[in-house]
Image (cartoon, rainbow over all chains, first blue to last red; front, side, top):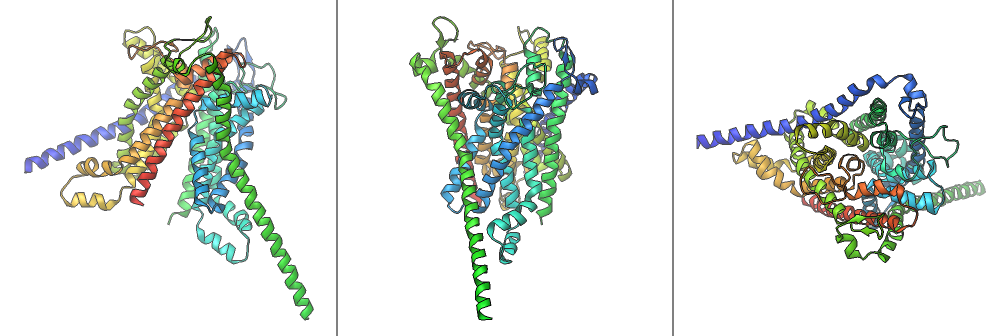
Length: 288
Length: 308
């Protein structure tokens, strides 16, 4: 009996060690991936790298047009995803009475979230680039990324709205405010940090996605900055992809690849990190 | 005096009416936008089918799915996607085999073992993995894992099925781990306490009580992780090697469905058979991931009803 218990105890101990080791392996791998890229690439970083055009067939110079293009796509996609996403979430949490309607929209959004990013690329190509004849352009890329980000914005806004205590709404309604006044003046301002989280995460995603922009807006090189919504753009993730896989100077542009990777990582993880901190504070505020 | 009161009442009433009308209008506007959001899913479906189905004028569904050679530009072209399907399934399957033990380890660690301070750091750390752009993970696979594999195993190229599976596993871990952790954490404490009261230790309780109780949640997590891996493009495009042949070993280069679309779309001229074929591959991907999502959805519903 005693030995059985000792055996069980030994198994428990070994299992816990293995489980802890598995967890820390993953964290270590994450740090290795990020650390390796930083160590290889930090020398490429300087002010010129961020503000200059590529030179000498990409082997020298900076990534300014790619950085600018990514910023355009981030702004353009959120112009689509934020209003539609937030309004959909308000509809789902505040207005829908019919459970069937709620389930239908939820299921649709869940499935939209599961569509592979390359399929969004095909969709953007066939609808925006060809059917609506926008060509390969900022507007086609922004629309594609905006729709890709919709589920993300909807879900985090929904979560933020559901966190707002019902008593806030009841207090407002009992003072004679209408439903819309309650939403507009009470619920939305209270939920704002939570909604901002969703916006941050979606901006990060727009900056980091490659497959959806490959056929809809991204170009390897433009000698000038885009002058309209219908221009093609360079973008950070596409820049890394092309430099690392195509062309004749893969080794000669390695430092630029690492440098661009660092800029993209800092941009995307920075946005995600800010979003996560906002969410953490927001959840804490309403946790009793 | 009486007249005045009546007047006030009237203005008040009409003000309320305006509010009611505008309130109802607001509701309709929100409803329309809500349905627009869902309509994008159908729009994607319509355009995928519109641009993909014409390929079946030149190749039968059977030959498209089970044909063994993919030579889209030869004369006559061959549109057999079986090597691509096998490639997708094998990177997904091997990726999942690598990802599941790590993910469950993380999930058990976070829900059962970690001190709360450690959890507050490790949990966001794992979540952060999910936000790393896939092109970065693909890039890392190219510049670090590929040379490593080539140096340590006697193989032609480090860009192969195994490399892709490792990188995909890394990407799937946050999805599988965080959903499994939610499932483990929502197992009622009373179940565990009953187990402890019967003399079981913590590990026995985890294995015999908590894990089985959370099983449908864990399956949901694994299926969603698989769906994510199956749809992932940049990693397999950059590190899987790109050969459209059947893999015979773990170290053979392959080309999954997603990578094939991304690699060839630029060279396929508009509305050519090749273009239609690539959209038809998009249909396969769409249906597969949809299927996985529906199963995951069903399982998580089942799970929710069990304890809530």
